[in-house]
Image (tube, rainbow, N blue to C red):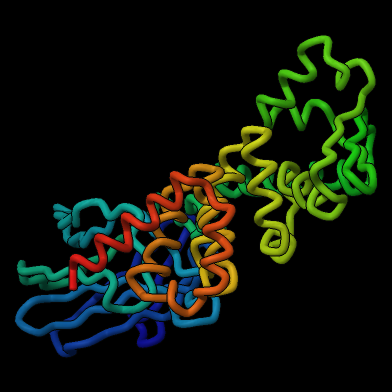
Length: 329
């Protein structure tokens, strides 16, 4: 085996093999890069009492931003006639970013020629929106591409008014939409179109408690086409619409988002909405901000005005929290 071929790894689409002729005279060897999936990879060997085998992706912007989540079987196979093999237990969904993420320590001494054989069962990348990681190979990639294309097409149906069959009347404008999409996303809309209500007969839905901009953001969410800035701007209106039309995922998204930036200017409004829409985590977060962190004293005038119009049960809860906090001193 020539010097150049001693570092070469032979590959198919999912299999990599590194043939080692002689490791006796060296304590460390690193393969040439080899490509599997989207990434360049390396295998390395290190002798130090034990033999350490490492598999890792080459450092790059791709590895930093989208490290592979790998499932594989790795073996060391003797090249002698009996072809004895040592097999590591199957690795499943292991995120690999550097040369310490997968290390196999082999206690059995290896002599003569042998092959390091890596069979990749799957390679995934993390979803950019924090969802389930997706395989880069046929099944996962096809599904992800299909989902992205379908979502983009759904968004175009709304923005380009493609075959709309119902009109949404906001307080200051109208938007065309599609019964089937609305019914699929909201049991309230589905009920409207399933019974002989005026929305079914007149092909209109009046949403008079929303102006056109938050109404557009609401429809954009339903169609999977909302921009993050619009979501942040219209969170409270979207929360109201989600509660009214029973869209639980939108309500949950608003709930989580409203928890993230509680401050002195918005805490009382959010506390009121937490009580109105039964959002326990938001209520707890606002209570802690006001009572445990003592911010109730920083907004005394606003808090006194809040007490004049707040729900009695909510006022009782606040004073219960205050009394409990005082007992702790």
